[in-house]
Picture 1 (cartoon, helix red, strand yellow):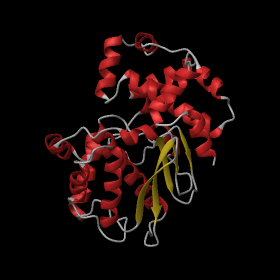
Picture 2 (cartoon, helix red, strand yellow):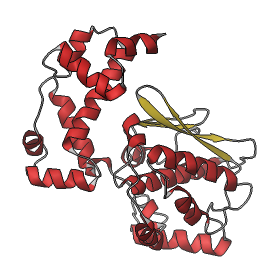
Picture 3 (cartoon, helix red, strand yellow):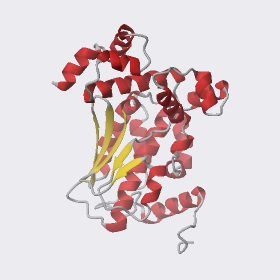
Picture 4 (cartoon, helix red, strand yellow):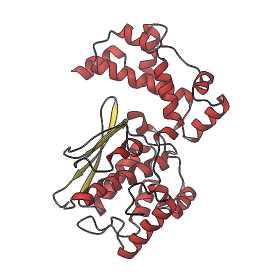
Length: 300
């Protein structure tokens, strides 16, 4: 199978190989780093973040923990007014090159993404990812595995995702963790497919219809689902139709206020608000300040 570029290995078999390798060499980092990531490190990473209130706190804790066991890659979460970024920066001790360098970054990005998605019980979808190495032969898979937009040969790895993910509450407990660890590493090596995330498809449908305001039954028909099924699937992903709709309008409002010269009345109309006053009330509820004040502050 290794000689056939079209061959595909079932996830269960890949997970078995993953487990066998880490057991044989006692290194969950596959001997890619300056010192081994001893077996059990992933379990203690999970326990370090389990009691976090939300994803922001969990990712901050994960970055600090990984800094203790991993000398070669530094993890940091940054945010702007409209988005969040996961930064993975190589340090002076990182010596992996070629395919090893590519795998090291892919491994850590998948690990953090998989753990984050499990914690909040919904896909943690990246909008774009910058990779610090030349384009690899398998780059055509990146749009499915990582993000729809990706670039190479950057100074460090940067994964961009919507800001509202950071406020998603952690929904797992000790019982769920025991099951999660019993299935690891399969639970974090299974590829996330963007086309399976109903919340993302609903968000895209709502955005495509703007300034018209689609209802849940209308969006369900667009996705070839019943309203009841759409409601249930969104609930399984830890969100609601209203949360998606309001989050989209908030993100677009903040982006347009920050990056464009659109008048406030035009932004209100483009987002489907009945008038400027309704937009003002909604934006104040989202951010604690009016849209004009937000624009002036971010511009200054």
